[in-house]
Amino acid sequence: MTFRSLLNQAKTNLIFYKTEEEVERIRESCLLVCKVLTHVGSRIKPGMKGSVLDQEAEELIRDHGAIPAFKGYVTSDEENPFPTSLCISINEAVVHGIPSDEIEFKDGDVVSVDCGVLLNDYYGDAAYTFAIGDVNEAAMELLRVTKTSLYKGIEQAVHGKRLGDIGFAIQQYTERNFGYSVVRELVGHGLGKSLHEDPEVPNYGKRGNGVLLKEGLVIAIEPMINLGKKDIMQGRDGWTIMASDRLPSAHYEHTILVKKQQADILSDHDPIEAAERNNPALKIVEAKEEYASAMA
Image (cartoon, rainbow, N blue to C red):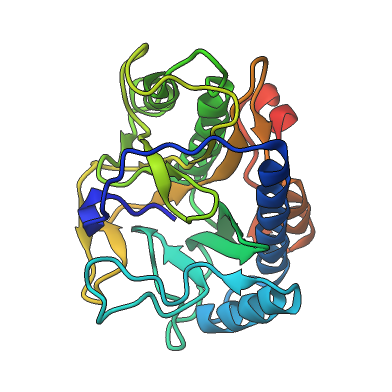
């Protein structure tokens, strides 16, 4: 999940570095998130409603002794808590889409699914964008590039680098190499005992700038990339964030641990990708570079 100052989140500027025990608890939470996303990947198809997937996701989360992290989440507007366990964002919806009991998925839809859980006092967070049926090539390329950019960012998440190196890698790849647009107002984040901890992790930036990355830092890296312009708007529900030009958007997310040689990816997209391959209703989103899938 991608809240920041756009949604009036309070800033604490306090970074918590994690112990090995804490990291393993976060990993356990992230793996449950990915189990939920794998279930979504095995089930999603044209004609299905997002509310069905959300109900199944909540049951799966609670069956594992965990709590849905997003359901009931509040920002400054405590009268409008987030109502569901999943964020399901379709086509031009960038993030924070509310699963619908009225709208059915259609052939050609691009669907981002974001999930978070609280298990044994620690949070996990991950997201994946699915291509349902006959998605056009322009949108498929956006998904491939965005997915690859996630690993471009993760490659920079090592001890001694800076947050700006992560953002620069993502921005360089998506904007300068392919002409897409990085959403500026929404970012990744630290997490642990809180769903959103410092530091914020933008998907744009300058090399050598920003917070120094140190071992023990756990962050969620989550490129949100628009096919068209970077501008966004908020939907009438008070939550859904949409591309202003109504062109498709893509979103992929991993939670990672900063280490000296190579980041440790605490979430796992492999089972999600296996479900994607085995679901005849989905097009497979391949990363554009071999190293990207190898890192996962």
